[in-house]
Figure 1 (cartoon, rainbow, N blue to C red):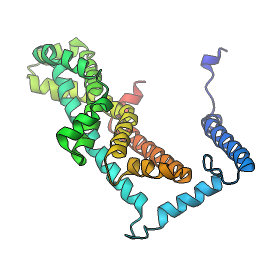
Figure 2: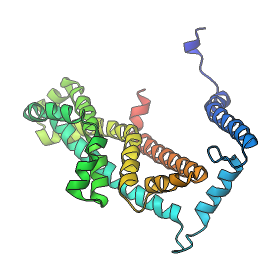
Figure 3: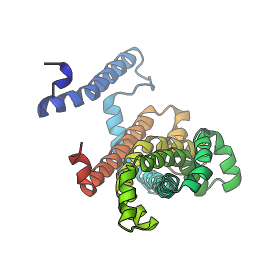
Length: 270
């Protein structure tokens, strides 16, 4: 039997999925042990036990001045910015992508513009956004919107264009108006793709958020990472990086679960 036809059993699949993570942890532990053996004061690769102790402190102990647990405060601020940015981007890309895919006049008007805008490096616009919108919350949210909306729009527009023409023709034959075709034919097929797009764009959204927080902010996960880097506090930085990764994983898992439950026919057809 060809290897492409071999399907691992459930225990084997779990083991294979865990192996890369175990390998990274083992490699880090070995590297940390070697560096600390040569220099016990080394800060570049803190011991896993030190990272664990730091994480426990960051999650449970309040700030000496304010009494607030800064990690939770940073998490709330960053998640709100991410939620607003991704939410606005998803809404705009859905409306614009549907319009480009279904309406020829809009397609001629906007498809080229969206394609060009998607080529602009979003981080290069960061100084302009700070000048135009100030250093507050708006500029950070706008950066996320600008960063992921064009790509999502192009993909959703193409998904609409890929809808078989026969479906639209049949709907028109049955007397469906343009709005009915949008709501009953196109939208159900585009929504699963929208969720998939959000999942794929989360990494970029986090990147833009952390970059904006690092440049101009007084609270947030990105702000805290760049604040403590001057002290080479790698145990704090790694704790925040692992926490951001865990948050991203949970959000991705939640979106995947929503998609599976809202559109069970999608997986049934795979």
